[in-house]
Image (cartoon, rainbow, N blue to C red; front, top):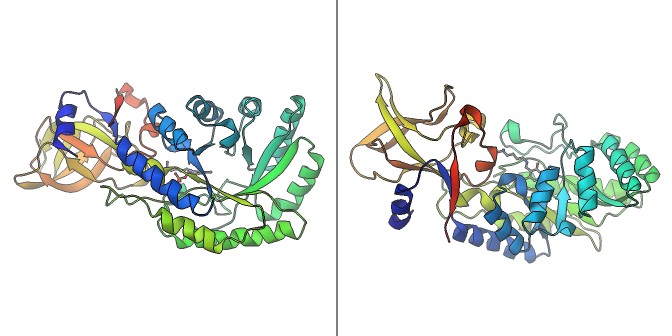
Length: 381
Ligand code: LLP
């Protein structure tokens, strides 16, 4: 981070999130450029970060939105996404959420159960509308990622299982206010082993065969999101969009007129955001030294919830003796720890810390626990 920016941060109350909008622009351009080579459609997974400046920029770049609640749909549209490019996923859509999405004429509901299809049909009928839907099918592909963010296995609650598809088709035949336009898949998040996506394409090919043999060709194949980022090398790192899209282009067997859609979250916004925090106290124990920050699990819960690694830098003190610290927050929970035995230059009260790769699933997962104050986010020009 440049000195001028650090100097600017010194006068601000902490903790707050900082977003490098230049870097976000570069990441979005890279993703868009690679996807456009194959005519792929990109939706941004709003759940990763819904701050208005971020949504505005992503919408301006021509992305659609992927939403998982009625509020996300509304906020996406308020911030510039076209309803005709909004997909709405989630295992538990409420009637009022479905109704407001119907009123907005969104592009597609990604449906996760037979009962959900029946409810959307009824609600669309009451409005005299036809709802476009995609079936979220559970492909039973292992994403080799953290078990809490794996979604595509048959033991997960997500999606419709293959053995239910006959019943789904008979439900669809009875549902006059539903139009099946797509098949949707999402196998998990923070996937860095790209062979998982290759495995997904072969599952999609098989599932397409099943539909094809029943004379069904859908227009949209939505391959979800999940492309991971490198939490160990955050600086200037743009995910390998070229290889990711190449895999889908090479291995997906498409029928004529079919479109491929993606729902990327973390890979777009993850590396542009950091949590900026101050050292409140240093505590030298018998066995450990603790650097106690003013940010904790209430601002960034990923390390505590998933044991996730985030690179941490002391922005104020970069020289001097190297000392190991446990970097902890102020919350009354022993799990409130960002890193253990991290070697840093000697750290003092008041030093500014940057916790990196926090643009995705960082600020959105902050909570009011302990009624701590998270200060307004800062954005680079
Ligand atoms: N589509 C669906 C249906 C999803 O469930 C998700 C994320 C995405 C797209 C976007 O996935 P991405 O490209 O961001 O991996 N809080 C966790 C991540 C949960 C992700 C849930 N689903 C974390 O902090 O790692």
